[in-house]
Length: 368
Image (tube, rainbow, N blue to C red):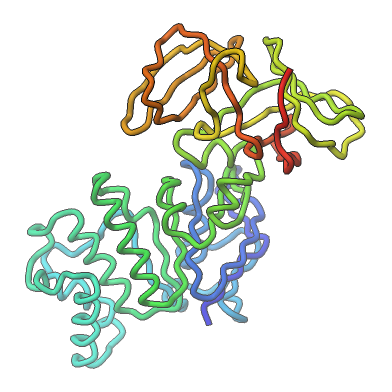
């Protein structure tokens, strides 16, 4: 049983709170990614799960066992770090076998486990080499091999792909996903790269300022972000944010863009007693279409065109607010042209002044 429960976990370093009372329930055999910017508390959380750091307060359970005060060697975990941490004087075989030798396992079992891990990772031909003779990707596979031979209940990964080039990171992402499926164990993966989290994880915990902003599937995180932070952090390029005033009356909610004459009809009624309040309207670049000026819900002027084929990214100035459009149009947009913007029905996200999501489930109906 490798269910991991994190309960009201707090970690303080002097007067700084790195982790601020988080709760995460990781299911047996689940692949959970913890993602967020530098300093959000994700690595501190992982180190507390591993036993390398002791929490200030709160509890960590593996199954029904409270392991909060147990040391790292008393927990059934294997960890892969950002640095490969290979012994340069040892062969690949000895590097992988090292934790098993420390466990005093029989030599026959050690050899069998090393051979199985090497075959799984495609590094059998490298077993007699030294780390200096390996590429970065090969060294990362050796570090993974050293972890998986332990046959631990929980595997912990602290930004293991950060030192690899972009092309190799894509390859290693697919290999890690395959490895999770083959091992059938619980994976907890920390990264600042939202693409890694979105492509590999069953669920994602998005952290900021020591707190979990949202915990959900990649689809939940992307299509229904719980906060403005999640909406802007997850997705490349980032979600557009338009500032304005939310008007709520008997005819439904409307959003008036600051600095413009545009008002968007949201087509919903909000459960709020306030008839007017500051708010932010979010929409992803791929959910906007360029149309003729008279046909758009919004109207603006092209400020910048960035070809990144097959897509083209177009920045449109709407009364001082910028809106990024992602399109693959065959037409050649020209800087300075006036254009209309049609916002995709069902793709609007509304956030209040505190950055929390407001219900926009029935989406935009039009503009005036």
